Length: 168
Image: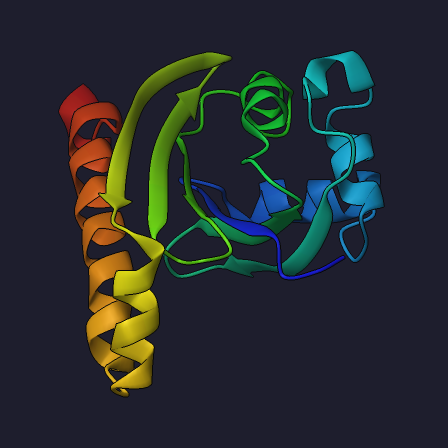
């Protein structure tokens, strides 16, 4: 598949025990991951195929992260379906879709099959990004993309994750 669309996904409050269970039940090193987590293709919506890149679990932050590569759009239906599976139930799933021209970024937040929040994070003409690369303004392009993604993630975590000490 060509460069396509990349969707950067983070599952929050995903413990080491849950990661160990996931690795026992699911093929985490290939595209089979997507079918193992959401086995019914009708729940994938218009997304026919997803490539998996860089699935990692951070034991210190309790975050599972991976990248979905699709041809055109973010796998929104798959993400929404996965949020109701026993693997990701009651977990905040944040996703940021970056199109192949890097001029459009869309953020999504899911939990328990609900789309909690979605927002366009960047929408500029593709020529703007192209000209910035021609001027070797790579850091500025990165900030245009990742700055809004970071702010979106922090905002969603504040809204949808209840700190451990609030139940005491």
